[in-house]
Image (cartoon, rainbow, N blue to C red; front, side):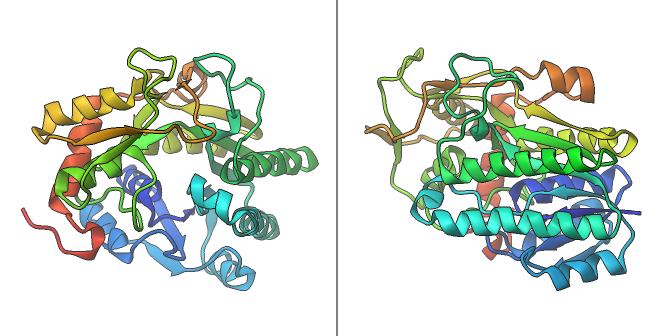
Length: 341
């Protein structure tokens, strides 16, 4: 029996594939490379010394997806595939709704047809919208503030309705906070297309000389230094959370949501200072206007994941910065260029 990983060539997907293979699982990966590179798949094999099956498939292609299920004994699905840039989702909302929601609907239809009723879904802390206070628990009101976040929220609702219609489903909704870092080998990491949307890849590209400086959006937030505070989690800790969620859904039925974060909030300036400290690289930055929709503070209460999944983040901000820089330094052009030592 195999675990199907949709979007397995992506940033979080590739790290999760490594953890799954190292834990002894057989996996099947599907990806359409819309925001990932084939090279990451080669490096998964390099790191684990294990082979696995890969299909270049778009979830919108139902016939191709059915082939994957027909040719493999799938036990459960970890569903990462989806468009994920907040700013882009505001510019092209219909594309985000169609891709993320329709792709998930087709996946669920095919899973149902082949009697595969176990899923770990890649959700997001964006489903909490503007939380009234922190830390955020899973029972907070849900109200996303952008099309990307709304696709995650809508898919959560779809999966809840699916379980209500058939309580044989076992589904975990994993609400990520802010994944950063890279595999400690420096062989796989975050390789965004174009100008990065997220803080750490932007810092990395300033450090490597691809970008001149970092724009810090806002300096007047109600935080200890005026910059926005977020819960940054190491991508390897996050990947391990998927294995714990997988264990739970395979052995039980039901649907439940879990926050995956560290429970600690760091400001933008905290991240910059930590990065400079562990890498000895100076990061030039300047303050600019706030972005609409950004909030002062956002960090998780992770008690539920600890109690019910037996999972807790173990890596700190210095680990995240050190591993991010090792990845960037070894791969100055991301996956496009073979690494040098």
